[in-house]
Length: 411
Image 1 (cartoon, rainbow, N blue to C red):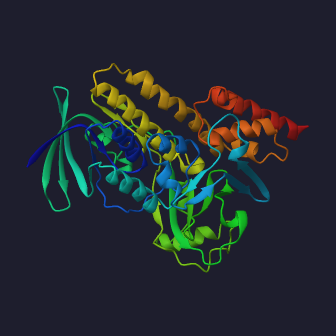
Image 2 (tube, rainbow, N blue to C red):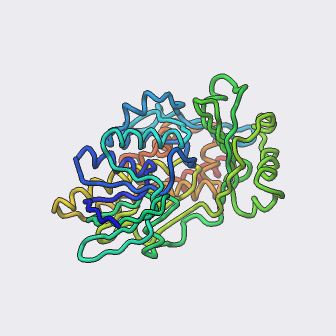
Image 3 (cartoon, one colour):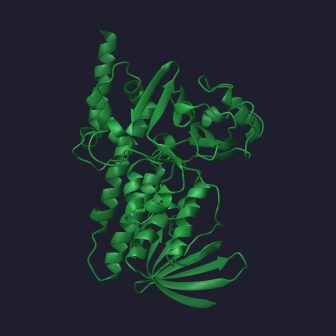
């Protein structure tokens, strides 16, 4: 068994781990990336939001991503019965990017890791972490690769970006009850050979089936499209048969999209994720930080997953680099509380989406343009901008706005 020494080990090569590695490579840090799977590999989280762009840029990926021809995403559309709510990122409150991408993650993530490899980053694919231990300010990580070869790495810091693998959460007993309970998701891809022109064939759309259940349509530039449902576990129990049969029954529940995809076979058997929300007791400790889905995952309704993954991956990398270079880091305030502020904002919006209050706000027939701009900035991922009242007072302002809407209906 070989024993290697690195300053920082990153577990996971998805967007969170790749952004962390990209930043650290630019600092010429001593790093190693461990990835359990072989790339390309399928992953969910295909709709990005503009805040991601800031993080990709700082990690050195923006130029390579721009030439890939991924489908540009300029906003999002929500449909409920005959009501339509559209958000244009160029008409949001404050500064920041006004577009991003809709991406098949297998291709997107491989672009990131290929670029890291070109930049000289050591990425070990098909390598599983089998144990971790922390002694005298150093981690010992044991790994096994696909050939059965075992290795041992000693490092000063671990950035856990393992996503659903949740390596440190499992090894260190960090799992905690999620903020959103009893929601599941099922999804697949199709190849659209007769895709409509314009917005119908280019923009992400969410169709509301009922207050707690919705369907997504995400078209990609390669002709494939992602289709999926999110809802309470009780809704999924309504459908019989295997995942393929159940998904076809679910498509019949849509109104706007009913019949549109009937001619297309599924690219793969629909994948079901039960109880999709995740949480941990804490996101950092001596010599480690959890990022992205390895820490917390709320709900896919506002596509916040990759934004939080890249935000936390980049910040963890910055702070870890400072720490290993002997500088004092206040992980509670600089990392945990910072990330929590953004999570709390999105948590409010997710909670009020499923309560129906935010849906009433979205589908108001005459929305106030200034209010819509401020909500749009939240949907774009700028959830740390305290100049925005819909960030600063997120819980109270949504509640008060909904009360005003209800009063209008009574009058």
